[in-house]
Image (tube, rainbow, N blue to C red):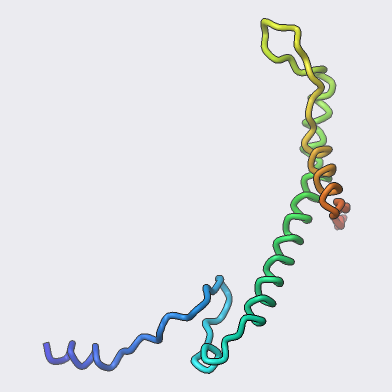
Length: 120
């Protein structure tokens, strides 16, 4: 019993930091918490937003230039128009994923670019 009391007194937890930390980021030190200013937080958030923008751009580029999606779209185009249901004659043209993603990317100012290929 006496040993557990001395163990509790010896271990102290540091106070909770003022900002959230992502995986891979170091927790702020004591002197950093004292000089915490808003401009550092704004720069950190700007870096994270830029990272997310690049990630979304790369995902859109991968979708548009994906070979298996292109194959499925070719098969879909060869099947013809899409019917509303089996009992009606209402049809529409197929909506293609690659064209939609490319149009959205262009609309928001970041047109997709072909990914770099490595030929083995």
